[in-house]
Amino acid sequence: MTLLLTNKDVEQATNIKTQIDSIEKGLLEEANNAVDLPPRLNLATTSGFFRVMPAVMRDSGLMGYKVFHGSIQQGVRYLIAVYNEKDGILLSLMDAAYLTAARTGATTGVATKYMAPPAAKTVGVIGSGLEATTNLQAVCVVRPIEEGKVFSPTPANRERFAARMGDKLGINLTAVDTPEQAVKDVDTVVVATNTTGVGDLIAYRGKWMQTGGHVNSIGSTGLQLREIDAETFRRAERIVVDSRVQMEGESGDLKAALDAGSYDRSKVTELKEVVAGRTKGRSGLDEITLFKSVGTAIQDVAAGFAVYKEAVRQGLGQDVGEFLELKTF
Image (tube, rainbow, N blue to C red; front, side):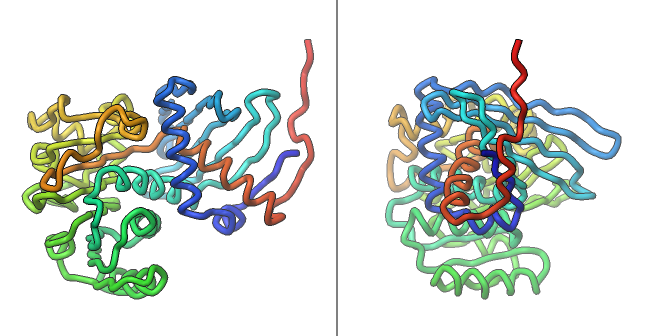
């Protein structure tokens, strides 16, 4: 069967802890060379962009892709397709607007699990949108967070976020007036914004990094976008990314750090190597660590399959039978 899932179906079938576990498993599979993961295909359109992200996960018996198109100004539409790798059956087509945010948060959760101070109890959040929501949820799954602070430029947004997420997660979450206040004296930081870097619009600055702290940054997936400054890369003693190739080709933050001579490749490793135990995510309580992500198709396919399984269990979506006709030769 092929299951069609709306964004509402996907949100109902998504569990952040399950997403963290699924993506961690996918990263281990990637580390063991059991996947095919080419660079994403980026095409320009008259109104924005069209991107395709495919992956084959042989150990999991899965293959699939995500396509998304649109523009930062007009909005973006996302679609994930998940297939059985062994027989080629299309298992599901799903709206991936919410799932993209959930898998991004879950990937941050995996990184935080290995990189943040083990007893981290405080978090600072810059951003108040959907990505900030899922990233904060994931951090709270992997660390015993008790309190936090949040900043976003619009006071009403940060106040609503603090009230809603504090209640949902059972933590003391306070809205503050500046990004520096949000990240001061906290163990773990989440930067999840759509700042452009135009003029002085940088969400997080390296001068705010604290001894023993961990920073997650998930925005700026375009060379024209910025959310953290070059000093952040310079001061971080350990940098973990989800993909070296895609990071250096697509991150505006990283491009700026390279241009400034602040990016030391010897400090950088990929998250899959940390998950596989080939390198540490943190070597001591005083180390300053940074996780920077742009997203990969392994994350999308692993996350999509987890949602598909839960949707089947709950009876969600529309079963359209064997959606694709088999053409024989």
